[in-house]
Amino acid sequence: MIFGRGIDALGCVLDAGEEVGAVQRKGSYYYRGDTKLGQGREKALQFLRENPEVGEGGWSGGRGSMLPPPPPLPPPPPLLLLLLLLLPMLLLLLAMLLLLPLLLLLAAAAATATA
Image 1: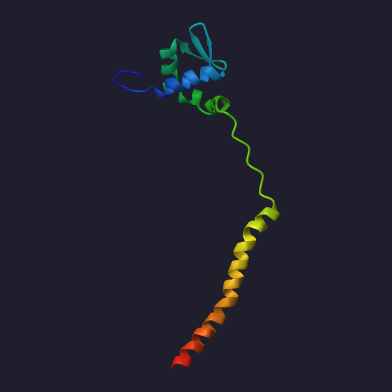
Image 2: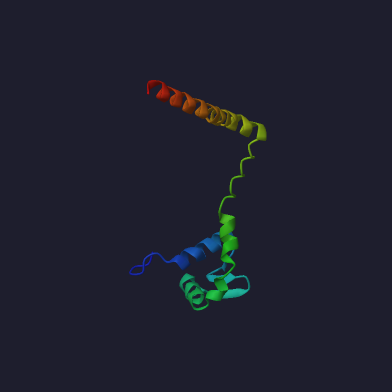
């Protein structure tokens, strides 16, 4: 957190890069691979602000190693289980389709009988 500027995102990235090994610190010097970023944290941040191409593309590898691996996907449901779940709905739909014409005939017969 920097007074008057808020949270320094690049500083957070530099710290995280150091934690995961994407940035090395030898004494007071910061290195990214063979590139010397500067002596001290502020000089390293200034170098990264002036040379954004140094930080592009490589941070994701370091960040990815900080995150836990995603949980494995559950196995797909077996076909038999899927059929057992869908069978009652299909039977109900079939019964409704078969009974609907019969109900319409009964309603028509009742309407003609009262008329």
